[in-house]
Length: 131
Image (cartoon, rainbow, N blue to C red; front, top):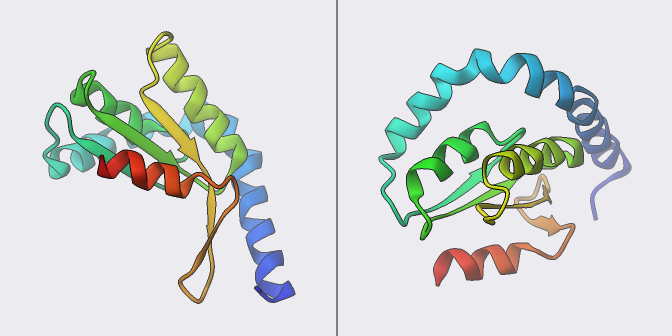
């Protein structure tokens, strides 16, 4: 079990990301557009690939990756912030209203390297990526 200090630190960090999610989507994402393009270029993605976007935030990288993967590809965005994940889901719904292109999950990485899957979705993500 994490110490109370570690739990408080995680709560603080999650709270910060939750509070700025809308501002991040509205004002900061566009400033990082060149970074997103470099990340995508470096990944050398191809149609049908599967992508795990850790710390997806508002889903900028995940959304750009999904554009390149085609209908057989899959992107999974993971973040500790529920509000960032909400923004990522909204972005995906706006781009692909009838397709499920991105699945968002959240988990907590502990200081000892283990993680807690807060929604019990990591096994499903792993299964989906590996099949």
